[in-house]
Image (cartoon, rainbow, N blue to C red; front, side, top):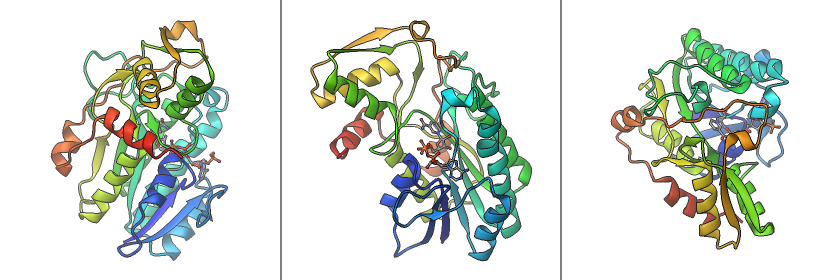
Length: 290
Ligand SMILES: NC(=O)c1ccc[n+]([C@@H]2O[C@H](COP(=O)([O-])OP(=O)(O)OC[C@H]3O[C@@H](n4cnc5c(N)ncnc54)[C@H](OP(=O)(O)O)[C@@H]3O)[C@@H](O)[C@H]2O)c1
């Protein structure tokens, strides 16, 4: 397969680079501002450049890992967030539709308002609370409207050795501070970027690209940010007091879903996969952090 990866310098993109199998596939790794060897420049907001990249290279699968992911900044830069997270995926999807490529597009639990008492299925009604969530939901709609062959994967709470993420932040804080306060009233499920990347390649490797639709994919298990921070501290052996607090103790100017657990029944039944528990994947990730 000829695979185009956008946003290849981000957490998920870098992880896909790590597991590339060049005996089996040909890859084009791209990012707006490549900071990694082997990554070509491609700004997904440049629709003409996207069209040329997809059409001229005979791309068969696009994995869109590019996104505007700064949830707090998106509140004041909603236009930019919409350009990257909504309009650009629409352009990628149109390019895919023209060339017959399949678009694997990554979305988020932040499309939901977090008011549910049960895990969100794929058919639950999105009601994003934040500019980031609105832009990502608009991105999903743009992909669906294009008529391209698509697999949209909603994930959540990504962590990896790369980029900025909660696990790395907590590792740093618990190694240098006597205590750290972490919110206990936002509940969800972490996702190791390595597991999500393996799942994406599993779909491609096993000729499952015809299983179009929207799918939830996170690790197994449910926790709060406090639980995750406690586990990071425990697994790392750091001597730091992890103290639970409330979201209201740390006003950030962004409303985030209080409960964003995603139901993975559909993805497990459709693709016949087992998903690791977040604690096991955290252990693996932390052992390979350096
Ligand atoms: N991180 C999470 O917790 C989380 C949770 C749920 C879903 N997701 C979704 O999962 C996907 C991957 O997330 P991630 O954590 O790997 O994101 P990330 O680390 O922020 O990586 C995104 C990459 O896209 C690049 N990018 C931004 N604008 C671009 C553009 N116009 N053209 C091309 N590249 C551009 C970024 O470059 P710069 O760094 O230079 O901006 C970055 O290298 C995203 O769709 C995200 O919305 C993430």
